Image (cartoon, rainbow, N blue to C red; front, top):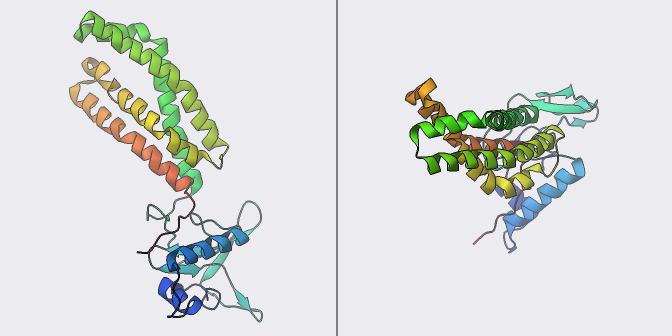
Length: 248
């Protein structure tokens, strides 16, 4: 059906009526998702960055690669561009590829991975600077906290920075070398990453006397959101396999 109408969306209901007669009782969503996933596996395709079968969220699918019939191009609107590997990657001017989970236009993976790596480098700089200047952190903490509280702040900075350095190096190498299971591993690590990042989000207040309370508050607000940005970037670059939905 997709090849019969290249470049056009084929709705899920149309596929259902063609594949399963009206008197057939079957888990349609599960069966269709499984069939599309197997088709993508056979074509070496991916839902997040489709070259052949594009998902139209909650509506259907579209075959976006050029199709030739009897020597004639059946999809004049599709343009093939050369990939770095020498393969032809089709692009369709009227088609917008949506992420299967987030339902947003899919950006280039190099962009999402690059932004993710930059965030990890930023945290790595925070940790290294804090360890090199821990005595300065002690003096700042002593300025507005009692003795034991200031010592606890310093200990927390040293411990979390020491734990954060190998974590950030792992995430940088995983994204840099495009580890296929980085998305899965990041989801497992996310609770710990969230706690670590939220603790470091209050770090700008240690510099409040120099940068001002307003700037420290604004920086903290941005850092509080940053772990969720990391998760979104990972989900866009490393989407989970499509999970079959259940009816009833």
